[in-house]
Image (cartoon, rainbow, N blue to C red):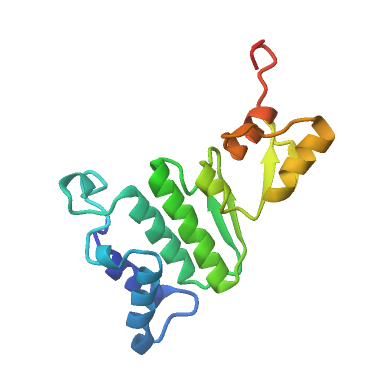
Length: 186
């Protein structure tokens, strides 16, 4: 496997993209992309190791959050019309997960590109970043699709449920649709 630094990986990807960047612009595009995703300080660190997949344990590689943001940078080089993120926060601590979602939201807004993400356990700070969401019950049944702000009114008006104070609305809604019919407490 290749063991490139983040900058070199983006530079390489920009040369083989469907619409490659001209060599004179490539360096500034790569640098700007790294800067916009908070990766400037990590640009010359190696992505992974040939033996263990990461230099992070020895202090020389990219962290999990940096790897996720680098993946986003690679996608953004292709100038997408839609950004799809399948569980972009899985395996990250809550702080890194929030930073990754913040980066995706910021990048999508700056480029005027819709972002669609699957998130299983969004913390409250991630919840506040969402404009719209689709809540799925087990089995994939749609329970709600609409604005984040409209969810409170919908669940109160139709079902009589109000998000308790000091509760993460995302967790509350997920708990509502994930009722275990065999557990009397749920």
